[in-house]
Amino acid sequence: MKIPLLFMLLLLFSGIIGLEAQSTDAPSVYQQGIEAFLYNKPQEAIPLLEASLRSPGVDTRVYLYLGMAYEQIGLYEQALGVLQDGLSKPGAETHLILYNMGNIAVRKGELDQAMSFFNRAIEAKRSYAPAYLNRANNQVRRGAYQNAIGDYRSFIQLAPDHEQVPQVLQMIAALEGELRAQEQRRIAEEEQQKLEEAQREAEQRRIAQEQAERARQEAQRRQDLLNSVFNSLDTAAGDKNSRGAGADTVIDLDDELTIHD
Image (cartoon, rainbow, N blue to C red; front, side, top):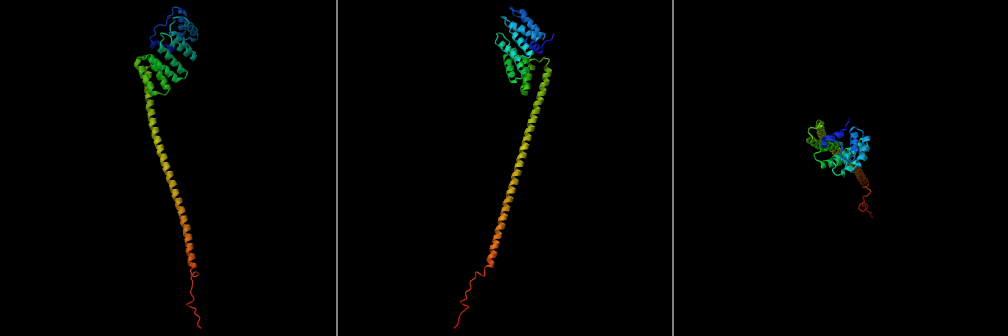
């Protein structure tokens, strides 16, 4: 007889001892559906469990089994619909229904929705260890390692004798190592950013200094050119004045040339 792992978890943590039918109206249909489910025959179990839903007073766990049967064959939307209906039934084991809805959301890749279901399952029953375990696994998928460590530790506290505790402890150690590595990478990246910023600032200062030096040299070149042109003009004007001095001198000949009678 092949019993699904998920159902084994239910047996272990929900306190379900027997699976005998509790309905007085259709016990055979309900029991046949459960037996088919236990023998991993979801296709056979589904119509039987659906038929038992129509029987007054049927055990509300039928919604759990039917939802899990739908999940087994990949009909996730139908599974969620059945489980959602089960939430509204008096006496329903709310934490188990929400827990399974979270598992289905994980299978669908809807990790945020899964978190919501696991959170609600834990709120419904704080001592339900599997919800912490699966929420921790979902936290790992979302990259929330610190939160995952907290949930793993809660799982160990609630179920210290569970067979998966050694693997959970290894997971905690691995996550703590990864968090330390992330912190080291963060520090290294910050230091690298500071170094690159300092290098950029140094390069900017070098460029600014080169530009200032080029501007100074250009200003000096222009000043030298201006001085050169000015000196050239000034020299030319001085030479002209020197050469034209005799022509500009007026000689008074009245004293020198006197006509005598």
